[in-house]
Amino acid sequence: MKIEPGTVVTLAYDITTADGEIVESSDISGPVSLLHGRQTLIPGLAKRLEGLEDGAEETFEFPPEEAFGTVEDAPTNVMSRAEFPEGTKFEVGVKFVAKMPNGQPLHLAVKEVSDESVTVAMIHPLAGQTIGMAVRIIGVRKATSKEKELGKAMVKPPPPPPKK
Image 1 (tube, rainbow, N blue to C red):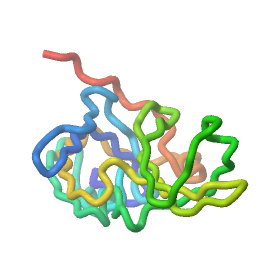
Image 2: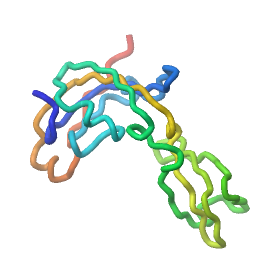
Image 3: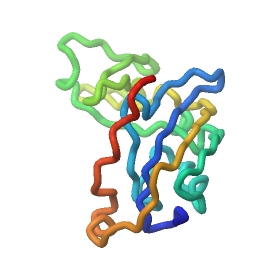
């Protein structure tokens, strides 16, 4: 079966920096299942997967706009000063790193400061970088009506392969 909108794709992947360093791998996190056309790991992936079949192995290169965006286009968030440790001093342009709930680092840059709030740009660590992605299609199937309604795959992908 070919990957097209309305199919659930299960894939193994490695994401690499331009110098070849693996920064994310399904060997660690396990394969991922996505509802094609509704879910993706990065914006440019869906169009690259279109038409591939179970068992296909491909390597892609993504410019920043198709991957994690540019630093300049990073989304912003207005946060209450109370969300930061007491005594934190803020200056426009200052950058710092916070941890997301999943433990991943989130790079923040102060954009605006008021008496009550701080506007920060949320910059992905790979923003502004061209990345590589190697994928292996593990499975393709038609999405259920429930998955289409919810806009996401409802199955757990298989566990990662054992280390050799």
